[in-house]
Amino acid sequence: MAKEKLIPAPLDEKNVTTDWIEELFDDQSALYGKHKKLGFMAGAAMQASWSGNMLKWKVLDGDRYEAIKRLRERNRERYPETESPFIVKEQILADVCVWRFYWKPENE
Image 1 (cartoon, rainbow, N blue to C red):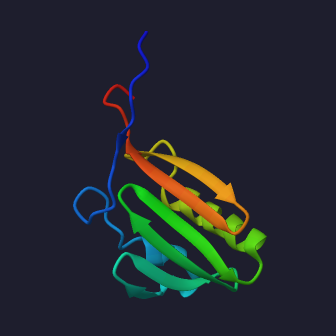
Image 2: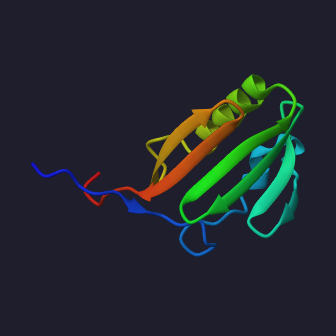
Image 3: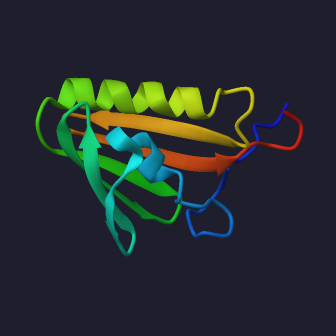
C-alpha cells in the first residue's frame, strides 16, 4: 500500500484561521501584529508566530516547561485528535514548540 503524502494546511485566514491562537493564552488575550501574537502561558511570556503551515511558540521569559505543558494541554482540549480536521506534527526544542498543520487524508 502506498504511503500518502501529507498536504500542508497553511495558516492564511482562509485554510487555517489564527483567531483561536489567543484563546490558548492565559486570560485568552494577546497583543498581536502581523503573523505574531504575544501573551502569557502559565505566567511565562510567550510569542506565537506563523508562516505557511508552521506555527511556532517561543517562551520569552519564565518557566518554559510549565508554559509548553499548559500550551499542549489547552490545544488538546480545544481539538481532540478525533475531531480535528488536521494532522498536527509537533516538535519541541528547549524553549520552542513548533506545530506544522496538514490536512487529514480523505480516507481517515
